[in-house]
Length: 254
Image (cartoon, rainbow, N blue to C red; front, side, top):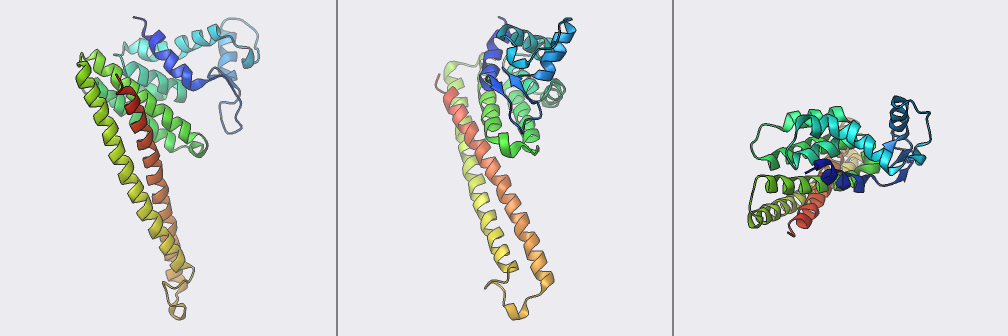
C-alpha cells in the first residue's frame, strides 16, 4: 500500500486552500505550500517563478511527496501511525523538526506510544511560539486529530483486535477528559489566587492601608502576574485535553 496516499489526505484536510494571514510567517500559501517553497521547486525544474495561487493540485501533491514525505516517512520506512505523525509534523513545522521529534520519541515497541510522544513534543513546541495565541486553537485540534488517527493506525498495524482497539481509544478519551477537568480546576485556583494577590497589591481590603508597604505591594503584584501566567498555562492544557478527548472519541467509533 502507498502510505503517502493514505496519510496525505489527512494532512491536506488541515492545510486547506488559499491563505495569506498577516501573522503567518509563511506568508502567501496555497494548498499548504508557501510561495517561497513553490518558487524553489519551480527553480529546481528550470521554470520561472509564478504566484503560488496559481499552483495546481498535482504540483502541490508532488511537492508534498518529494519535500516532506520522502525525507521522513519514506526515508525511515516508518510504520503506520508513526509515519502520519512524523509527516504531518514535518509539513506543519519543517522536516528537521519532524525528524528531531521522531528520533526523540522512538524506543518503544508500542508504536502507539511513539505516536503520542511525537505529538506531545510537537504540541509543546507550538505552544512556545508567540503566534500560538493566533493559531493555537486550530493547531491544537490538528495535533489531537493526528495523534488519535495515528494511534488507531498503529494499533491496527500491531494487529490489535477491533474490540481491543475500541477499548484503548475510549480509554485515551477518558484519560483526556480527566486531564481536562484537572487542568480546569488548577486554572480556576490559579486565577483566584492571582485576583486575590492583585487586589492586595492595589491596596484593597485584604491589606490595611495604614500598614501598606510599597515593597509588599510590589511583591504581591509579581505574585498576581505569576499566578495568572500559571492560570493561562492550565487553560491551554485544558483546551489541549479537550481536543484530544474529542479526537479519540471520533476514532473510537469503529
